[in-house]
Structure formats: C-alpha cells, structure tokens
Length: 437
Image 1 (cartoon, rainbow, N blue to C red):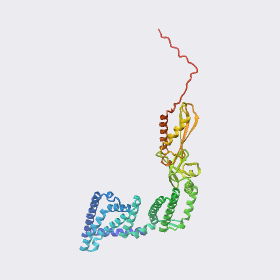
Image 2: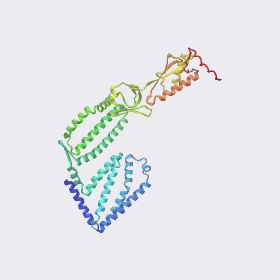
Image 3: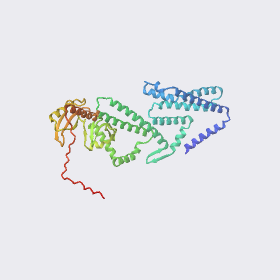
Image 4: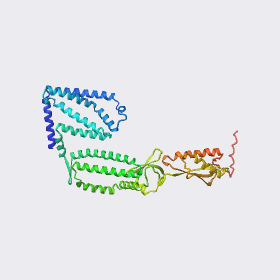
C-alpha cells in the first residue's frame, strides 16, 4: 500500500502544480506548441505514408532492412513532431527559464523513447510479440521519465502470494510473463534457424534432421524458461513441489501425450518412418509430410491431411512402400472376351504399360492370366514405379488409357456381362371380361 500511496502523492503534487500554473503564460504556450507540433507531425506523416510506396522502394533489400524501413515510415510523423518540438523548446530556452518548457521536454523524451523502441521492435516479424515488446518497453521508459518507476515497482511488489517458500508478487508475475513471452519467441526463432540449416545439410537423412531439430527446440525452450525464472528471482528449488505434482499429472493424465512423444522420438531414431515416405496405415494410403512431437501428418493427395498419433505407428501394422527403396508395384485388372487369344492379350498389355513414361523397364511389367470369368477372361497387369511421391493415380490413369488404346488397335474386345434369362413355366394371360349388354 505504501507504493501506491507514493504514486498517488506524486501524481497529486504534479496535478496541483499543473493546475496552479494554468494561468501561467508559458504553460499556455507549451500547450499550444505541443498541439501545433503534434498536429503538424501527424498530418505530415500521413501524407508521406501515402506518397511513399515502401514495398517497391525496398525491393531487393535484405529482410531486416525492409522491416527497419517499414518501422521508420510508421514513425515518421512522430519523428517530425520531435524535430519541431526540439526547435520550439530551444527557442523557449533562449527566452525564459528551463522550467517554463518542462512539459515540452517531457513530451519530447516520451516520443523519442517510443521511436527508438518502435524501430527496434519493428525487427520482430510476429505482430503480437511486436506489440507486447513495444508496449512493455515504452511503459517502462515512460515511468522512468516521469519518475514513477520506483514507486510503481514498490506498489506492485507489495501485493504477493506465498506458496511454501515461493513468493509471487504482481511485479514478479508481470515481469515473468513479459520475459517468458520474449524468451519463448527467441527460442522458437533460434530453433527455426537451426532447423533451416539442418534441412540444407544433405549429409543428414530427413529423419535425423527432424530428430535433431526437435531435440534442439526442446532444449532451447527449457533453457529459456530456466533463464526467465532465474532472472525474476524465483528459486528453482522452491518449485520442487510443483515439479512433483507435474510428474504425477504426466504419469496419470498425460500418459497418451507422453507415449506419443516418446513414440515420435523412437520413429525418428530407428528411421522406420521419415518425411517423404509412402505408407499405408489401415485403409489409408498417403505421404508422410511432417513428423511432430505428438502426431505425424499424412497427405492423402485428395485434399485431406490425416494427423496420425505417433503411438499408432509403433503399436499397429504399417506398410511403408519406401522403407528400403522407393519402388512401388501397382496392379491393373481387366477382362477380355473369350474370342481373344490370351497369349496375344498378355503381350499387348505389357507393351502398353511399357509405353507409359513413369513405368519402370526393370523390373518390367508382367501380365498374368488369372481366371475364366462368367463372361470374360480375367487378367492382372503388374508394373513398378520409382517415384510414388509424385502420385499414384497420375500413373494408374495413363496405364488404363494405354491399355484401352492398345486393345482397340489390336482388335481385342472388352465384353459386356452376358446374362441368360430362362422362363421355366408359362403363365396364362388373365381372361378378358365379356362386354356388357
């Protein structure tokens, strides 16, 4: 309560002094100077932002320089205000005492602090983090300029809750939340940079790249949390009780999440599943696109993306078409009429498949005569491809069209189903009624 009382006393004294000087000529001059310079800066900044196309102007610049230029253009109105206010204050200092231009000096200091913070925070691409950092930094600077930082800090620290040996005050919570947000953003940014560098290393397999990336991200986040807790004055030994509770919670309530996390590490370590593999799980066929800490993303190439828990890859049977190599066998079934020569049909089908560009010549396509059907001779054509990641339907369709064209050219007919209908008992038509009259 003493901290808030100091703040109220400080503000009340400043307000009394301000109201007492309302009749002062120089106070009115300061208000006029601030109004004119602020209005001039706002109008000039708006006009410059309309005339300057920062996107075309910064074409080809480095990304950081582009962000800095955009932040500078956003602050150009405030910069014009600062320059005009500095000129006005210098004129006032040459005419009267420094105390007669104190209000203008405070406004200049606040605006300068905002410009510097906005330019530095403008390098942050995440808009939410940018706003939080800019607002928090300017609030701290404003309190320091106004002489309220110590009083506000004491007031916030006076409200606290004690958990065993851990004391949590409002000041610690606010500082911890802001620092944790910034630290997590830095940790994720560094982790993204490491993952991009890992993807450029051709000596590492995709699974090893993902494994190292996930472990490094986890370590960066853990280090960031420890640094934040230490910087706000929280004794890590006081968190022993909470860590024990979290351990119990993980053991009972979060066992599925932990199981999926451990399964994901196992999959990355043993390389049984890796990004780019063509897999069949259940009745779904797709391509592994991303392996996360909890789930693996499988693209089915029909507009859907299946998120499969990592545990399912460990506990269920999974067909990996590209585990040891990327070759994949496809099958096309068809039937021809009984008038066709089966030997000739096999030769025509194999030659048709070999004309499709994506079908491998080694091993070459094979056509099998499978059965005598009700109305057709049934065959199966089996062929191999080496690039299933480019799609399966995009090679199945050309093969079927090649078969159709080849059969038409060779005079081989694909029969329609024939059904014989036999009437075993003749039913007499109903007797006609005799006309009346």
